[in-house]
Image 1 (cartoon, helix red, strand yellow):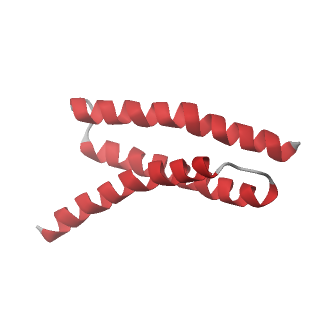
Image 2: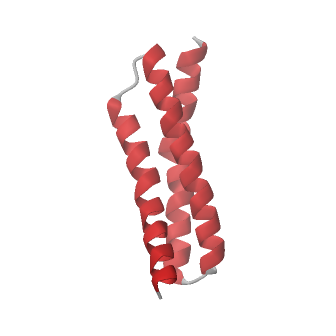
Length: 95
């Protein structure tokens, strides 16, 4: 019962709050309302939270039936922007 509740909470967070916050951050940075350093800091923290949620779902998969689509989506959502930040950092160091 407790594991089912944890699964529901993690799925709710991933599908609603974190995705909404992530979209808001992307809209703000595209609009130029936030400084780049501030965005990179919070983007990294958000990616870290999403990656932890991914690891939590993987561990949860061994105890209960977790759809692979949730695991795949969280991994994709967390890793793609992180790779973008790494590319930007690499460009800065190359110049």
